[in-house]
Image (cartoon, rainbow, N blue to C red; front, top):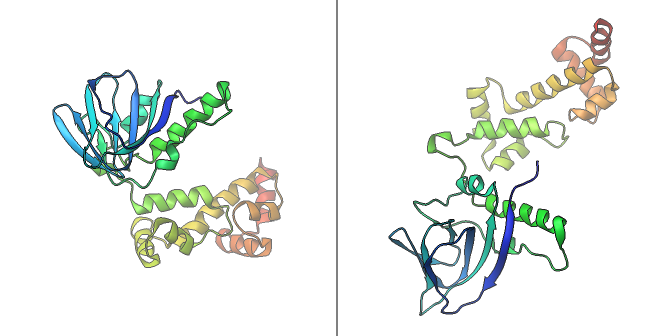
Amino acid sequence: MRLQLVCTDNNYKGPNEHRWGPGTREIYSLHYIVSGKGYVVFRGETYALSAGDSFMIFPEEEILYYPEEADPWAYRWVDFKGADAKDLVARTGFSKKCPVVRGVPDTEALFHIYEEGVYGETARERYAVKVYLLLTYFFREAAEPGEKRTYFEEATEIIRNSYWKQELNVNRLAGSLNVERSYLYRLFMEHAGVSPQEYITEIRMERACELLSAGELSVQAVACSVGYKDALYFSRLFRKRKGIAPSNYRNKRTEGA
């Protein structure tokens, strides 16, 4: 499905006394403060911003923003609109209650949307993707506090998305989540009743059964497809768990089909 997002402008404004508003616009406009300080006045509230802060201008909402005289800000901005714009912005930390987000990692480089010499439909689609990517850096972890995903949920999703990788193991899984291996072990024992390694193996065997039942791949190909380089090791592991060799499992399934 095509992304319904259009970048209408993006640029950089160096330190100066430029101020805008109060007024409204018909588009969304995301600003990132590169250096200096400034102020945003929105719905009766005044927000003081400095380097690393960002603010969003919402369509048809009156806003005023201006630099601090002693240390005027420099900022980058991206203007965008489109059918998907409202829903995407709703996933970020920006809202009409507070149009400011602080403490986001350096996103300045992502504000370089336009490319010299790139025009037409290809350019519009590429720019839309870049705006989307930029917005993801401002996405909240969850819409409501109670909906935040747990480490266990994150871990099981990683496993299901990468069980076929030979390098997937408990150490890499813990590293991806930035948690201790012992903590991950406790989580899996609590929520799944098995260790993380056992869970990985179960997912791999589950997929191996599906592939063997289809009867289209060799045992070697199935082993590789579920994360095992050594087909003999895979066969021993499969037999230990299923009580039957993978080749016999495949033959029985295909014969009964």
